[in-house]
Length: 345
Image 1 (cartoon, rainbow, N blue to C red):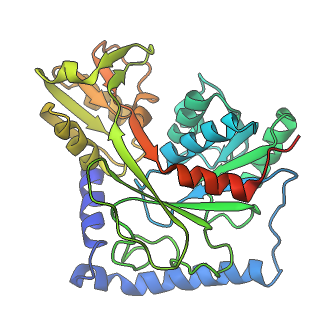
Image 2: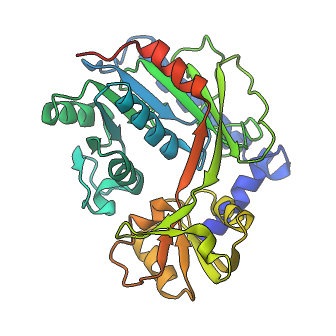
Image 3: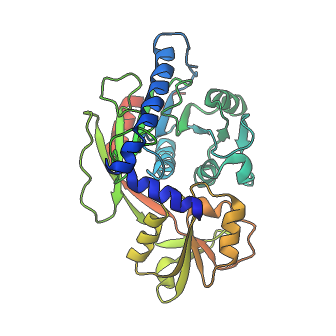
């Protein structure tokens, strides 16, 4: 919880160009110089990215944490399947102790797969491989699944070692924050113009259901909108469903080990739920920390889907995950289809 408080304080300072953020500018300049040196190595040809024999679509963000990348990846994979593609997904697998390529199965330990890759596999059923070197993970996936004819790279906008055919940047209502690089701001890399090398080609900006449309971002890139809301039903580890409004007359505990726990808590309150307690943990919180929070909670416990994958062994029968539902502008998927063309054999 101390980590979550520190993350919340840093996120607050990264949204405006105040004194605290300015103190961190020298570190941001150093970070920017390291990024420029890495970019120059690839642009000059000193380092060559790996080109796969199938198209590669990258879904990532240029801001830190909680922009909605994972639900966007899931929605995109489902769309590609419906269009006739046979996609597979590669990801680094945040927090894994072992960086070597590994397949993700439904029962894989989240500590070995990462919470988000495991969630993506369970939600879509497509082959998912994780590895620090995504090109190696993708090669292993294609060898194990020769039927796969497209790779979706989860969180790979800053991974230059894997060549890509289409790049999608996902933003939330924070936009660019204060516009500065880490750690003075939210940006993992300078926000590019449309003609910058390896710039995202499409931008998907998410906002809560009912909020006014988010403002356009600088850079002149095609911008599409998505609305996010909580699903109508909560689910437990056994796949059982419960109407979310069934919790409206109960005092519930909300637990979240994600980048922006307060956003989840606020959406629950917006659905009329009474939160007797909230437990905010750091993003990608360890299973032991989540289990401890859940074990000490009173009343029904609501968490996110990403948290539930780490809590499959909990003895609690009143633990429920509330899915996040995205309503994505159909024009976004049309733009994806236009750039990819028809599925390949």
